[in-house]
Amino acid sequence: MTAVATTGGSATLRPAPVVGLTDVAFGYDDRPVVSGVTLEIRAGERVAVLGANGSGKSTLVKGVLGLNQRMAGEVELFGHPAGRSRDRRWIGYVPQRQAPPSVVATVDEVVTTGRLLQRPWYARQNRGDRAAVARSLDTVDLAEMARRPVGTLSGGQLRRVLIARVLAGEPRLLILDEPTAGVDAAAQQALARTLGRIAAQGATIVVVTHDLDAFGPLFTRVVVMSGGRIAADQPAGPVAGQGPPEVGDVARDSAV
Image (cartoon, rainbow, N blue to C red; front, top):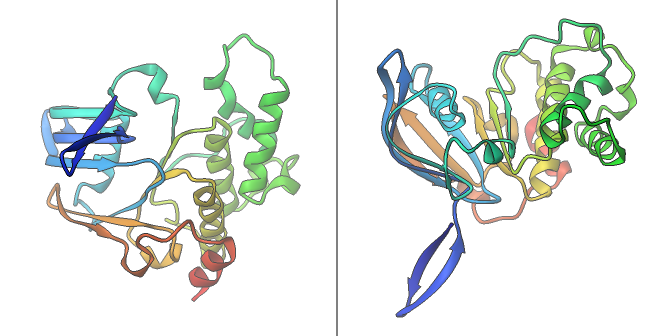
């Protein structure tokens, strides 16, 4: 689906938003937590979702993912009504809290599981799968740890493994919920470098966070949640309209 924009009496077509929400309400056990939200996120945007605890920011992104109840409104993903499985495979999601794999596995083996949505369950791993896994490990700076057991990693390294697993599926939309929670400053800088590389590839990124400073000039837009509604939706300060940040810029600004 495409949207029609009219300029000077002539109609032009533009791609449908990656995420389109119209007057939605999301919640749990028939109790709305987020309501009256209308929001569009377009391809290539890097959006920070901010708000205090209980403001509804995590409920909002989980609603987009179909992980809670939708009580009102419309949700579209890639121009189609939400719920179509073929569209959901293009979304990569890294939750705030995710237990490390409970089996003995290497970094490479964990990241490889991210390819499962891109091929039939019975198909063997092929050259394309291996290349996607290798690219993902390079992006998160863990290629040299491919054979390490995940049980030996630090919290920040494990967080990057989980991001690599999602990237291996080659998503069109990447959603991360509080990726810097519980990790030290050095790990935050590594995460910022990782997201800078992903942004430089033109990815659409949505990050739920309480700390913009941790990511330097990554974001192009900031959405602020309060009381289950959008309180502000605006360009991300002086970086609005600029291209993806260089890796060095992200690392330097994150270290300040």
